[in-house]
Structure formats: C-alpha cells, structure tokens
Length: 279
Image (cartoon, rainbow, N blue to C red):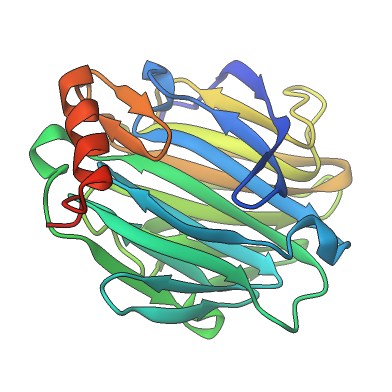
C-alpha cells in the first residue's frame, strides 16, 4: 500500500450560472492532474432567491455531468423526454454524448439548497455517442456508518476501512467515482484507491486535518498511490472524494461544449445553431 499525498490546492471561485444562480466553482479544463474531471460547482444557500430561476434549457456535447444533492432538489427535463426529480440525497448521471438539451428547475418545496454538479470529460471516441441519463434515489445509495461519521458511495465502487460499497450509479461511459464523507472532529477513515485513477478531495464543511490543512471550498489534488487517509479537523469534516481514469487527450472548451479540437467546437456550435446538435 502506498499513501497518496496532497500535491496541489485549488480555491473555489464565486460566480453565477444559468438564470443567475449563485454558485462556487472549481474549473479544471485542460488540467492534467485533475482528469477526467473538468469542473465542480457547489450551490449552497438558505435564500431561495439565490437559485429560484434555475437553469433554463441549455445544450451540452462531449461531456458527462454528475449531479448530487444534499439538500433541496431539482427537476430535470430534456429533449429525449426524460423528466425526473433529484431530491435530497439523490444523484443523477447524464452523458451528453453527441448532444442533449435540458433544463434544471428547483423543486417548489426547496426553500434551501445544497448540491454539486461535476463535469466529466469524454474520450474522443465517445463524444458523438447517443445521450444517456440515469438517476439514483437517496434510499438506493449505499451508506456506511462509523463510530464518528457517515460515508455514501454516490457513484462507483469504494472500499472504506476494509468494507466495500458499490453504488447503483456506475459510469455510463467514462470511469469515475464519487464518495461523500462526513466525519466528527478527529475521526479518521482509510480508503483503498485505484492506483490507475487520479484523485481529488473537495471540502464542503469543516476542515481536513491540520497536517493537510484543506479548508471549506478548497479542492485538494492528491498524487499517485493506493490508499488515502482522511482525518477530520477540530470542527469535523464534510468532503467529496473524486476518483477517475485520466484520458490524456487535448481539451477544447467553449461554454457547454467540450471537444478535442477547435474545429470540433465550431461544428458543435454550428450544429446547435442549426438544430442538428442532438442527431
């Protein structure tokens, strides 16, 4: 077993998206040590005015999105006819492939909101595949309760303190996994990690121990290894652990489109403008 060590820290930046929704963003386009993850958005507010307008119809091509809600929820609608609600504790994996046009609207009963959307890159061979959509309700996501915490395997397979958890949400195309970790002050967990995957930790509450010093709204990128030790700071810890298979291809990005070349980006924009994005 080789322990992973923190190599770099990225601070989230406050911004808005959709119809003025307030979010905090980690952008990692063309960042080799974060592959296959491209971006992480956190939405957290107790004021419905910060998110009520939601994300009206918008397109994507060339990526997958993973949405995970801890509080509140959104209704998803897309051009394929999918309609589904992501409520507190649930998750949705969407593969845009060749193209999808969708909207995300806050649920009427959601007076507060806390959730995340992660963009995951697709390899060039899969960027024009048909779009797919899959969700998991909160009661289907595996949980592991320890003496001082709770862990949820949102997507993929995880081994925590020697115990295995496998989510019903497995990768639609690109291999990527997400674990939600909540620990009381001073508590520790040990994760076995895929040595071929890159790994990052985003802190959404408290602090990762004083040795590492990762704080709220910071993303820590960890080096190679097969094991990760997480210890909560003196105010506890809430964190997302991201593990994914790097792709190693050029990234060309513009707005909601992520391709390999500028020419492919121009084609995506042309297809959207002429009503040909989705097939």
